[in-house]
Length: 253
Image (tube, rainbow, N blue to C red):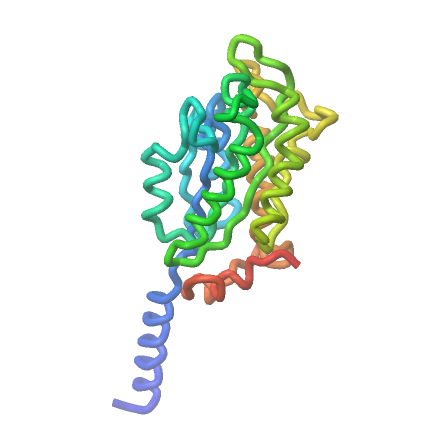
C-alpha cells in the first residue's frame, strides 16, 4: 500500500472519529402552554421553530406542559409532571425556563401565605439550583413570558401580575442566582408593557401567541443562545464537548 493510500485511510479514520465526537448541543425548553405551542399550527411551537433556526448542530426538546406553574402550591405545579422528570434525567447542555403565565392567574397569586411573588421566587430559585447541579453542568437561561393582552375573568389570568410584577421579579431572580446571561426578554419582543403586537396572538385565547408570535419567541431565544456572528455557522467542534467548555461558542458577546 502506497503512502498516498495510507494517508487517505488515515484521514478517513480521523474524520469518522471526529464525526463521532460532534454530538449536537442539546437544548431543553421548560415551560407551559406557550412553550408547548397551544393555539398554534402543528410544528409552529417555538422549540420546533428554534430547531429549524439552529440546524443540525443542535437538538431542541419541547418540555412544555399546558397549565403548568412554577409555584409548587400552584394548581398544576411543573414539579409533579413527567416533563420535570424528563428535565432532571436529560443530558441537556442548555435549559430555557419560561414559567410564570399560569402563576399569574388569580387562583395562584393570592398573597395568602401559600402563593404569591415570594413563593414564585423561592420555587424558581430552587429549580435553577436543581438544574444547575445536573451532571452536564448546563447553561441556564430564564425567560420573561409574553405580555397578557387582556384580563381573563373566566380563566383567571391577571394582567397586573403578568405584565407588571413578573418581569422585574424574574430579573431579580436571575441576578440573585448570579446567572451569567440576562433573562431572555420574550415579554418585550412580543409587545411589552405597551402591548404593541396584538396581531401576534391567537384569536382563541389571547394569552397564547399565534404562529407569528411563536416564531418571534424562537428568534429572540436564538439571539440569546447564539451570538450573531455564529448564527449561520454553528460550531460543530464545540458540539463534541461537554459542559460549560463546549458552550463557549454560544455565549453572547
